[in-house]
Length: 395
Image (tube, rainbow, N blue to C red; front, side):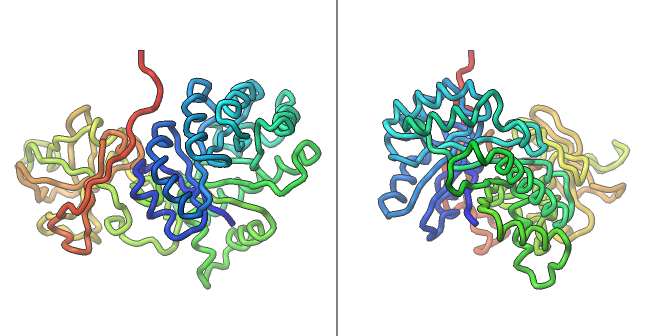
C-alpha cells in the first residue's frame, strides 16, 4: 500500500514531518502556488535520494500548463503528475510534456459517487479518452500511473464502520473502472489512488485486534488483492468536520486531536438577562473562521477550554460559535444551559474551526506552539509561512 499526502496545510514544515524517513515523498496540491512553494523541499528530498512527486489535484487547467512545466523542469522527470477526465484536456497535456522536456505522469479521474470531478466507471473511455491517452504515451507525451478517486461523502459519517464503508466503495468503483477497460490500458500494474481523511484514518482500525466488523474484513481483503494508494487530506491538523466523523476507534478528546485554532478577542458579554440565554460577542467572523457547516452540531466553531475558568476539556457542556457575520460572531452554550458564560471583555479565546482548509486560507502563516511545554501559556516556538491564493487571475 502506498501513500500520497495532501498539502492542504500549505506549509513545507508540516510536509517534511509527513515524509519522515520514508524513501518516497508524494504530495497532492490544489493550486500551482502550493507546488511552487514546495519546490525547495522537494529538491532537498531528491538530493537525499528519495523519490519525489507532487500531483496537481484538479483536472488539468490550461492556464497553469506553463507554470506546471516550469516546476517539472526544475524537479526532473516523474516529479509532476496531473489528472485528466476529458479528451479535450489531452492537447494541454501534450503541451505540458513538451515544455517540460519529458513525459508527464497522469491519473485518470474516476467519479465514485461524489460528483465533483471525474468520470463514472462505466464511462471511463469517454470519446476515446483511453485510446488517445495510450497514443500520447506511445509518443512520449504521458505516463499513465493509474486511476484516482476522491470522495468526501465520508465527511457525513459518524462511525469507523461508515468511514471504512466509503473507502471500500471507492476502491470497488476504481476496480470496476479498471476491469471494464483492461484491453485499453497499458499491460502493467496500475495504481488505484483513493481516499479522504476519514477513509484513510479509518484504515488504522485494521491494526486493532478487536476489529472484527464486516467492513474491516472486506477492506483487509481488498487491500491484499489490489494495488491501492491511499491519499489523505487534512489529517495532520484535523478540524471539527473531520473529528466529527469518529473514523478512528482510537480518537481522543477534540482538544487533544485538533491542531489548528484561531485566537479571537471577546468584544462583549451578555450574561445579565439581556438576551434569551447568555451570549458573548467575538471579534472574529466569517473572514476569520470561514462559513463551513459541521454535521455534528449547528455552529461555526467550538471554543476551547483554554484559559477558561471552571471549564475543562472533557466537559459535556461547551461553548460554540452559534451565529456568524463577516467580522463578528456570537458564542453561546451548545445546549439550553442558562449558566453565565465564563468570559470577560478583552479575553482571548481559542476557536476550533469546522474546516481547517478554508480557515487556514485566510492567514499567511501559522504561529506554532508546543502544548507539551505549557498548555496554558501558548508560547510561540516557531512561525511557519503558508501558501496563499488560488493561482488564478482576478479581473
